[in-house]
Image (cartoon, rainbow, N blue to C red; front, side, top):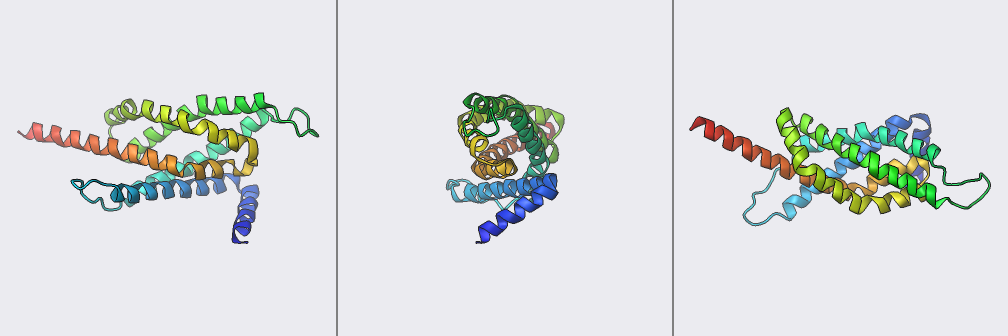
Length: 208
């Protein structure tokens, strides 16, 4: 009953304020993914690794990343809906598998690479990194993350584009993406720690 009421409230909010609704939903789910990542990192740490206090600023960065990109993804889904209609005729139940495949292909070949670019750039800038470190982060993790994306997301988006109503596609992908956000969070955190170690070594070398 509570789930049904929540779905109705979401649908009503989406109809009146679609961008705000998608932004808040996406931001919240991304923040939750980072929360899961931070907790799991401490639970799975090795004996020689120290306990990491919870980084609230890191979760805030993930919230604002989801907040800013989710309305864009919503508009992208609307474009795909219009550009590649799944039903060739209005009164038929037959689905065009070709159109479905084109939606997934366009999403993975256009939106996925651009979304990862935005993620890495957004995190680098909001972490206060200089341009050289942002470029280094691109070199170190972009290719790895993009290949991992192509291993995971085509099937999820196939289900999303085929079965989910337009209003629920961003929440569906963001909900499925909690584990993906966990992966990105850990990957970004490792790169952040690497850059901090490198910067510390450079400062130590300069002072010696």
